[in-house]
Length: 190
Ligand SMILES: [Fe+2]
Ligand SMILES: [Fe+2]
Image (tube, rainbow, N blue to C red; front, top):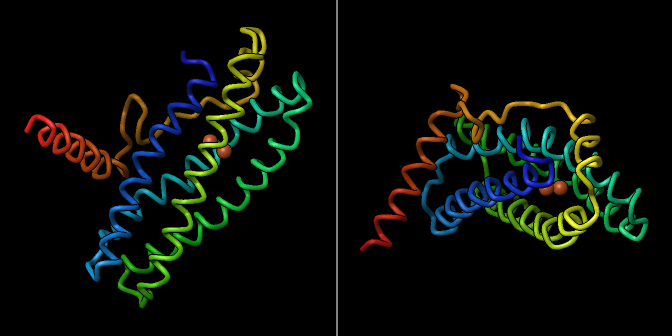
């Protein structure tokens, strides 16, 4: 099985793809178009159910091990853990907002634009710090033994969207992601 550092990195690659989808829907809202609220609901459900819990648990365990080996990382880790709390709360708000829009409740366009833009920006910046600092430190410092210990601390939970099998509730989002990839590949081939 892939070690926890590479699992976290792969989660970041997957999250970046999802954030690009959110970005594209916010752009539609900015141009007075109608965002695909069902797709946004699926993306934000994944963000709040899987990433806020499973991904952040992996990071919490890995960051603790990095700080035990390199106390200078303590302040950076403290900031990232605070950001996890902030992302959990803003992600939940955005999930509720897109669910309300999907249920035809009244939702202000400006709220979708501002909350969506803030969430995408905050999460991209957060992941950039983790990739540029904590993951680089972890790759340098953690031995095989450390990695096994961290692995033992975290629950091995199946990724319902990007794992070996796609859960029923995410199949339409998965199909959308694959279709997007294919259209990008076709456009490149020209
Ligand atoms: Fe994080
Ligand atoms: Fe992360």
